[in-house]
Image (cartoon, rainbow over all chains, first blue to last red; front, side, top):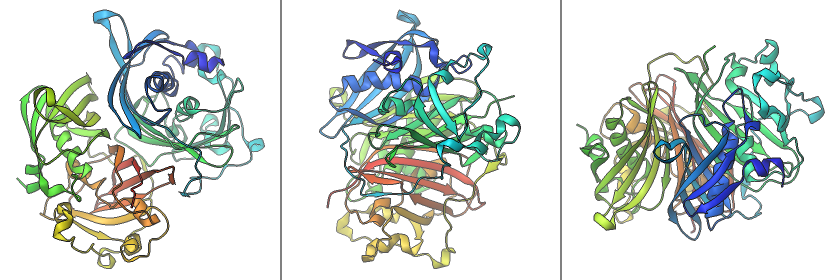
Length: 267
Length: 267
């Protein structure tokens, strides 16, 4: 079992409750990465479902949970031949003090390795991986433990904001894999769709950009190898921005699509 | 009060329940249009919220409700200064027989008329409205009553499938307004994001294409006048397809963004 598999483990208590333990290794300056938290929730949802894959996940982020024990509460809303729909809530606290931190609606189904009937080209072109660059290691006091879990190589202009040269538009592009070698799977895709720095950094914004809603679709099971993350946004307005991420696998297939609506950080 | 306002009215019973009456005038061959059903749900959500606008809505479609009385059940998950998150469920049937038909998670907030800090160009160009074309009137026996509620003028190639000439890619583009004159508002945008024929028709598919998940974001309050709907898809695979719709208002502002994951119809 890899460290990621262990960090996302969900242990069945009964048909509506799973115990989980949120790993401090996925911190981004304090709060835990939203993709990591979705992966934890999806472990419980898929284990409880007669279907194998989380094809759609809509998550609303209410508050930031702390590392340590937590639970996933499940309510199966409908199950049929093709799909099962489940409400899953990540909670922390005991008894009367139990509080919801993330609310999700998840549809599980079973994907096959069918060839797509039609597929568009990737949303953007990537330079070869050897021309891409890594982020500098975060300072230990920044509590960016998440960065050590993943290995990302960025399309250089999209991290120009780091050195004072943002491109002026919301975007981010990178090759992605786990730092500890592991073939990508749907849980790693949950992590991947929320792994880029907020796309608004490239448009000149800064600071913690809290996600309000993140919806992603698993479109195919990823082939082994590097993933490509193509992130963009359509509008920054009134304190809100959208961030879309497409994930392509090493075989050139679109494997995941996400869109989140988030708040622009202050400062 | 317009017919649309009446058809989407939600009457407060108590803080967690609203009575609604589903209008047979929004049928698309039997089932009611999903955007209409979202508009009904959002009336209840917004009425119960301290905030004015439904900025994100994630809806999972479980079953097709029938025209007639129904209820919206609400659970307020969190409320704060900026936003309120609500779970809202459309139900029909009485007592023990009550069943959920649509499950939603909705974030309400209050948008201002701020100028966007940054905005991209529309996803596609539209010909002038006088070069666009309407769909032929549906046969009465088709039970397509929805078509009479709206007034749409299509970018001609994107309805070439009607006359045996699909473009070969998932797309659909049209100008949109209500048949009964009414300025667009967030509820009309809920209708608009699900008003185009399924984009897969343009790629050669046919038949009822049931939506599994539709998530949409209200990005700004629409100006009076015509709306422009730009629909597209990224992949058709394994019986699933995605459909993205951008809605632009007459002032040239992006006012709504949606993505749905749906099943390809058979036949």
